Each structure stands twice: as structure tokens, then as C-alpha cells.
Length: 274
Length: 274
Image 1 (tube, rainbow over the protein chains, first blue to last red):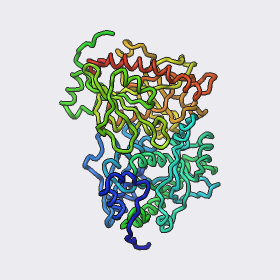
Image 2: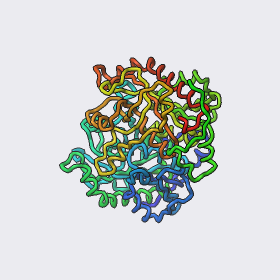
Image 3: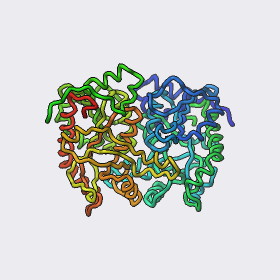
Image 4: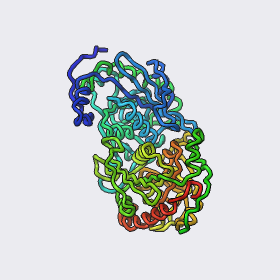
């Protein structure tokens, strides 16, 4: 792992909210990243990272009463790490997966923590026809939705909601990640309509949160990257749910190793160094 | 229209956050509703109500920079009315429809405005086989999602996310509304998988926001009702998008008339009087 090189950063286009605030602009462009926000939907994905970075659970009531979101925080060298897990649904007791929960968690966490970078980490399905294998970890180049069909001109594009993720060429060179497009929908399975839209999005991986997190982070002008580990092959023989559950724990080890490498790389660097 | 009868209210089950705060409990149970929040996705649906109640656009920066949400506010007699329209998407310029935007708007508005009641008003598709006709206005008895298929035990029920809306038997008697189940998804069209799930939800109407708003309001323990006017017949001959656009303005007049009657009814009443 190369040492961080201290350089003057250029403002990334996504960090454009700083345009009206010269002090904030200065801080973002000239200083290393001080605060990252890691958004994770499932406890199984979150806990190894909590242990790895010795993060503490927040008891300050950062979020309003009633929401299940759990914030863990700590430091790695100079970097403030916030990991927010979407928590267990209070009615059903399962992880709060999907776009609605992810968008709320992202919104509330960005508002409360003002991170310079959001990292959405999680598991995904992969298409073997596009080169994905179980255990691969991807950095998403682009994200889009595949289950928001609104067949009215312009609304159709809003529904797809395609966005580029924050450009991190140095990170991609340094950390051993595959690179490809991510498509998001609220179902674990894939209907024929979903499949057509995923092909339309030219996606190699499929998750249940990414494009929603991108939407919120874009609204609030926070650069965001997506790290997704492949638990199941969508165009394979096995039923998705079975394969997902079978591989979840093992694949999560790969995911957490990659997120750890990404955190090591980010420490000491400013946004344009990524 | 009957005059509001001033009675001692009983605590609705949804307002259970007050359990730990006797002062708040007292306020909710003994006093008429002081603040309502109307959540609307489309400008066409919102503007007639803004004019009807002479609401003013908020310029206080209630919401963070970058979000397109627009708050209008004013009073009807003793009732503080907040109408929040989800606004035009900054990238595509179309109304910010769908569950992600609706959930964010609802969360941020409840946090900022602390309403005692949320009203989600909008248009919907209707099933003629279940008795719906163009122009009908429904009060939803229940809401659920039809496009969140997660075929893992318990996760499947979380995905469907069925919730009862706040029970308002007196409102239903007083205002001329039909009554039935609402199913929510992020597509204007309906895939065979959606159709199966909508039938599973026993829904008579279909929208793109309701169940997401119910999820958020439930997290934050705010009673919520859903008023939906039928713009298109899902099980009819015409393509949904065409029929929706053709009927949007005319049906919105019915919607706004019903919302107006509901506001008249709410004024002076407490939650358990509804």
C-alpha cells in the first residue's frame, strides 16, 4: 500500500455545494478527508467492520426516536469513521433492506454527520455472462434503478435515475476491485421486466440500495462510492435466495476486507487524490 | 357538514410515542388537532389546494439546500395547514414521484413540522373489477407494497410492508369517499408480477407513494390517511400512461374537493374524533 501523497486537491464536481461557501470550498479542496460515512443495510455485513475498526455504538440519540438506524463511530489514524447500519425493522425484526430505508438512513446520516465521502458497502447479485463470480468485489462505475418504469417521456429517465459514482481512479488502481455498473431494485428476485431494464442499464451487478443512496447523496452534493461483493449469480442455476443465504457470511469477509483497504487508502488523502 | 363536537379524545394507537411523555399525551388526547401535513407528489395535484386555502410558499429554508421539496403553509380557522410538494427533480425537471422521494419528503417534513396528522393526497390507478371508476376518490383502509419481492421468510412480509391507515370512521361517514386497499409500487405500468402482488394485497387502487409514506409515518408514530383519486383504469382497455395524462387535471379537481372537505372536517376535532 503506497503512502498517501499530500497534494492540493481539486474540487470534485459532486462537491458543488461548496461553491457558495469559500471557507468550505477551501476545506474540501486543500485538506485530507476528515469524515467518511459508510452505509450498510445488513448487520452481517456491518459487524466485522465494527470490530475491525473498533467502532463504538452511538448512544447520543443522533437519530429520532422510533427509527432502527444504528451508528457506530471511531477513528482510523486521522479519519473519522461513521458506519451506519439500517437496523432491524421494528415490526418484522429483519434487516431494513431496500431503497426506502436506505434513502432515509443516507439523508439523516448526511444531515447529522456532514461527511465528505459516502461509501455504500453491501452484497449484490452478479451476472456471470458479464464476468462476475461469487466472492468478487466490485466498485460501481455507475448506478441506476431497474424497477421504476414510468413510460412517459422524461419521467422514464427520472425513473431509471442513472448516475455516475464518484470517480476514484487511484483507488481503483491501488485496491484490488473489479469495476462495473450497478443496477438497483427493491426485489431480491428478478422478473422478466427487471431483467430487461438491468440489461438496459448494462449492469454487471444488482443490489437493493445503491441507486437510492446515489440519489440522496446527489441531492445533498456528497461524493459517493459503492463497494459490492457478489453473493449469488443471477444468470446461474441456483435460486437467488438460497445462493444468497448460503454465501452471505463467506462473501462478507471479502467485502469487509475490501472496505478496510479502501479506508486505509482514503486516510490522509483528499477527494481528488482518490 | 356537522359542527365539530368537542369531546375528550382517546389516544390513537399510532400516536404511541407520547406514552413516555405525559405532557405530550395530554396535548394529543385533549386538544383539537393543531397541525396537519399534506404530502403531494405532483404539482398539478398540489396547486389547486394551495390556491383554495391561500397557502404561502415557505422561503425560510426549512429543508436543506439541494432538495426540490416545496412547503406551502397557512391556516384554515384554527388549523395550521402545511402542504409539502415533492418538487421538480433537479436533473430531469419532472415531478419527484415514487417511494424514495416520498419517504424523504415525509421524513424531513415530520421532523421539521411535528404534525399530528399526515394526509397523503394524490392520484391512483383503479381496478374496475373491484368497483373503481375514473374520478372516484378513495380513502385507503390499508396500504402495502407490490414491487418488493424478497422470497426469504419474514423478509417477504417486510417487503410487502402492509399497514393499516389511521382509522377515521367519522370522517368516512361525513365525507363522500369510497373505501378500499391501496397498493404502492415505483412503476406507473403493471408487470404480471406486480399484478399478482396487487391481487395478493387485495387492492382496489394502485399508486406510487402511499406505502412508503406509511412506513415513514409509522417509524415516527404519526397517524396517516391516504386520499387517492382514480385517473386510470388498470384492468381496462386504454394504456395507463395515456389515460393517466388525459384525466389528470379533471380528476385532480375531485381530489382537491375531497381534500378540502377533509380539512373542513378535521378543523376543531381531535384525532379520536376522526
